Length: 93
Image 1 (cartoon, rainbow, N blue to C red):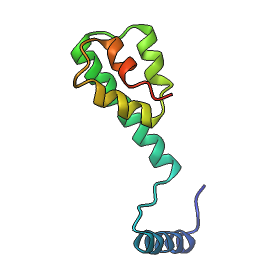
Image 2 (image 1 turned 90 degrees about the horizontal axis):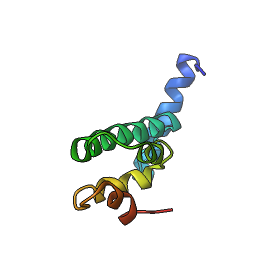
Image 3 (image 1 turned 60 degrees about the horizontal axis):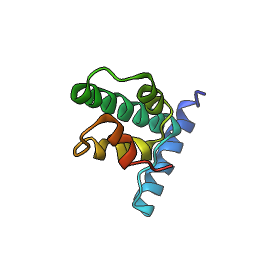
Image 4 (image 1 turned 60 degrees about the vertical axis):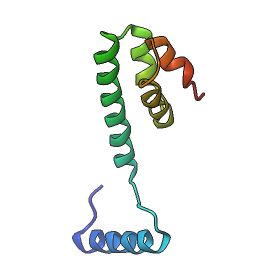
């Protein structure tokens, strides 16, 4: 959806005010999706670098994961001895 320029400017000014007052950054739903996609892409790359081509079950887990799961698995990749352990140690269901 495209807002008129004057309204778009007003919306962003309001968001900046809210961010300053609440000491919290506003993240749009599109940005959140992009962040999860970035987490997925990086974690998949790291897992493949460490453990080789991912089996179907691991690829499916990654594709269906939420941000918190991806974060937990990213932490686990540092110490888990096997691919299976990455997902076991950090099952955040």
